[in-house]
Length: 529
Image (cartoon, rainbow, N blue to C red; front, side, top):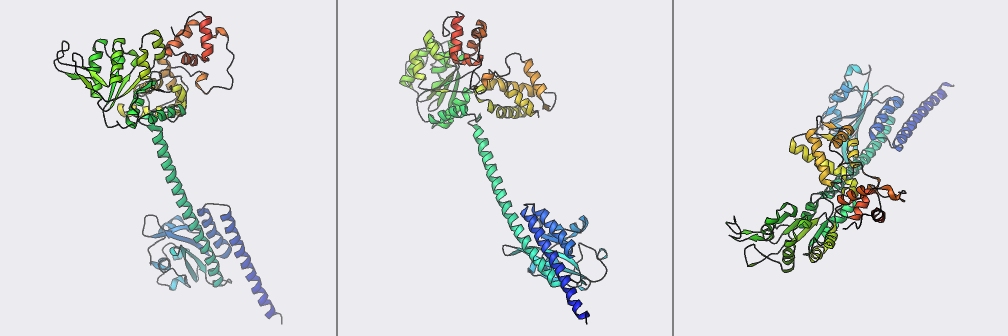
């Protein structure tokens, strides 16, 4: 009497067990997804749980191989590396290929009796004895089949086949959603990478404008002023210490304006003998002096419709300053030995590291010429004012020096930081010379802090660690005694600053008022004298 009632109870108990296993499987997979784990981890654990909880063994997820027409086993559980490698299928090839091609579920009740079953990945002798089934379901994303989920199943089990198919369908749905989400994340990631690459390119391009390297605010201000006045015709006076790149800025002004396709003529006023100055600038006629066998156009004529850059304008002899003023006022030149006025249309850019206002006060530079040149003064920052640009400058000079000398020298990050801490009174030119020397004398491929420090010591006192005032000024200045600097130190600072009291004070870590007070206190007279 009891037998009939025991069978249904046992069946119900078995069914409840499998339902518990199914619920645990689904909850665990959902938990893994919720943890934000990588898709690879979630899919491999899904196949593991299918095997351990439900007996759906040797599960594999077959997807399109990158840059290949075939599909391959991308994820698996219970398969060796060799078996996974053998699991490659073309569309329509074997049961797996058929499922991918047709997009339909396929159940093989007995793999030994199915001629289409390839047994390619797992050899039959590695499978259990008896009847083994094979289930394969298509994985669909956005309405198209992209792969398959497949597994082996022992046929004679107490669990209904329909339940296995149902849970596999649920897993396929999850796989499809994961693949869709992953594809979107990849797409967003690629878009972000492309955007970052574009920003990096833009940043690199901004770091090098008109051949001028850097993004420090003082440098960008100077460049902004250059671009702002590039279309004007008024003279521009570039002011700054020696080695700050005045020629580069003059060329930037030329390139940024409407004369960019016309000549750019550079004249170093300090390098021309006084006897040749007039002939070089304004030209000469045949027979104007001994050796003048032919007429020659001067640099002002050669700069026709373009730009002439007079570097170190403060070194121009007084006798020629009046002639230059006339050229600027009337727009004409008269060649040496000639009488004919020649019209010249050019943009004048002048540069100096001298205090021209002080020179005017001393009578060594014409006041009217100074005001004519000083229509648009632009201050070029010293390297100490743009210290954050030093690593980029080092990288640029290092690459150029390596290429020119067929070397492959690199600097460690510590070495670069040490270079960035130096004062560089000679500015960019001095830094470039130091880097080129390092490359030429390097005895190994990578130079560290000790190598760089030794090289700087060999060059002598011209390079020294930057004073505290080279960095952004603190909220307060430390107390300094009146006798903190001797007369010789004050004189040397003023000489290094080209007579500029403000810059001399900065070199010594003083305010301009402190510098002037100490100068007067020591009885040194007028600093401008």
